[in-house]
Image 1 (spheres, one colour):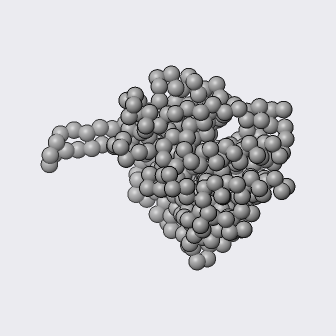
Image 2: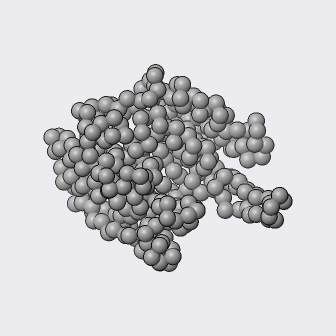
Image 3: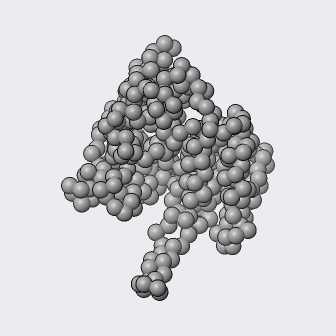
Length: 352
């Protein structure tokens, strides 16, 4: 039997509610489909931890995490810790950067049983591959002067290595799907980084002649996500563009509460990390109505990454069957609680 060691970081807010729910689903899936077992170690690193210790995680936190097969994260953020970058850069982005999780992957699809807010969404099912280590989210920049003369400078960084890495991943993924890659660009307005991005995309496209490609400016691409999302297969984007596009992807599915994400380490030196797209949602903490679907779908992505494809497929099928049955949390127009949705997913898994 294969045992997977998983570091669990529930984090803040509803992360503490949906992570245990998803762990229950993981355990049920492992029991029913056989051959795998999960061993978990939970860590309390969060904004509450910061308020007690002045840091989001201990100095040796990364050394602790590097021995695990994967990291399962809930949410980061608390209104008591401001500005937001304190919590984000102290935990989530720290792990992403120092564990070389250079690729962020986020799917969006028209889930069975879930109505899209779009009038004519089509049967969309696409994946956004987001460069996850540089781009517009670089740390290079600063401020100078104060008052009327105050200046803030933020430098975007695009390396050939980072850009090629994201694009090659997108092409490999497309070959497992419908064989189409769209590049998100803005080379008509951003005169250095985006023409460079386009040049590299053209070069990488030449290495994969069997894959259909096109480039679309980010403003038009955002509009196409709304008016005809079904035309896309794999989209590759810079850090900022990918971040924005995937929130649109979550919205057109029906709720940001259902959207999953994976931060992928490609070189095998460190574990990858799996987290839902939604935040800590402090306004609904403790009410028992947080949507667990995003965290459960994130668990499915973790299963896929670990090579447990059949088990992952069973989890996603169970999610859709539960939604089709009408068991939904209030953000999806239902009346069910977090536990009721989770219980329903487990029941469907056990029916198989």
